[in-house]
Amino acid sequence: QVQLVESGGGLVQAGGSLRLACAASGLSVNSYTMGWFRQVPGKEREFVAHINWIGGITYYADSVKGRFTISRDNPKNTVYLQMNSLKPEDTAVYYCAASALYGSKPLGTGSYRYWGQGTQVTVSS
Image (tube, rainbow, N blue to C red; front, side, top):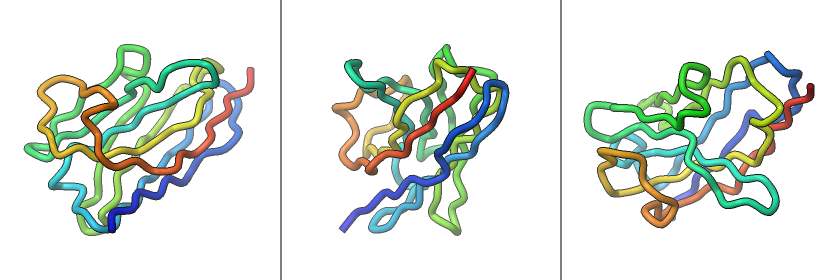
């Protein structure tokens, strides 16, 4: 049984940092494209970043490029999202997801088979 469990969310002031973690069980994070998405009420879930299972190539949404970094720790089977210079518009529920597809470009939500339960990130102004 595959489980993805996010942690690390919370309340932070604008300009601050948070590191989200996604602990995986039932799959290996270095054998899947691992992605982070976020969603605010009333809006569609949007792509934030992903890391490919081949070569660890990463992709980012333009809105977070230069501020967020996705990485993985294979021995811990965990994927991280380091978020720096946070803005109020980064406030959302953040989800971790796993796809068996190789993402030569950002994959849509329909390409991801496994999802975590989400973790709330709130950035105050």
